[in-house]
Length: 163
Image (cartoon, rainbow, N blue to C red; front, side, top):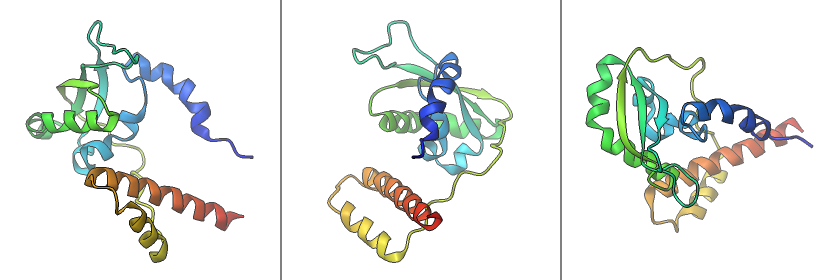
């Protein structure tokens, strides 16, 4: 039986990420999904600064300030979109994790490899997935679930081909 790699990676990476205020690596790993590919290419989250007593009853940090490294030419765009970025981050987490954005103008290191392409499904699989998600009224939730479903179904298909 195969073990999931993230099961072993999370405890190791967690300590390093906590040092910079990231309780979870999701913000870093999913930055492009949160802010969009174009903006993610010119920016990267650096750290989260949590206020004293900013922890809610559930133990999650609240009201943090996210420090974002941004290429110099794109800093004004990020500043202009700061409210939207904060809103998207908080929607991603499902609670008010971030209250402010601080921009650090610097040269952003590009990722070593490009982000994965969306999974391609057979037309019949894609149609069935769409049909299952039609009842969801929230467009953003529906799109997120469709991306998740595509990834899961494509991974299952890939495993089936290897066997």
